[in-house]
Length: 81
Image (cartoon, rainbow, N blue to C red; front, side, top):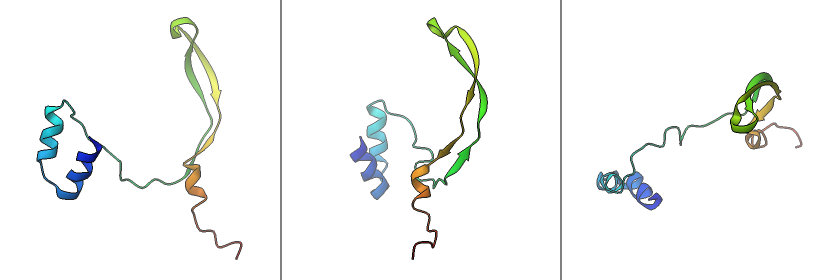
């Protein structure tokens, strides 16, 4: 299927989409080519379900984190020259 997707992106021929539909694959890769920027996710309180069968709600703190940390290393800083 990924080979057909690549062929479709190169040629734009609708026969590859029809082939995927015949095989039961219907969907889109939304946001696949969108560029993302590194950012910080703020800490917050979160409701999580715990216990057997996830039946017991509990409020716990979530730590902050850097999202897309690997992209921070690629940003040119101008230092170290």
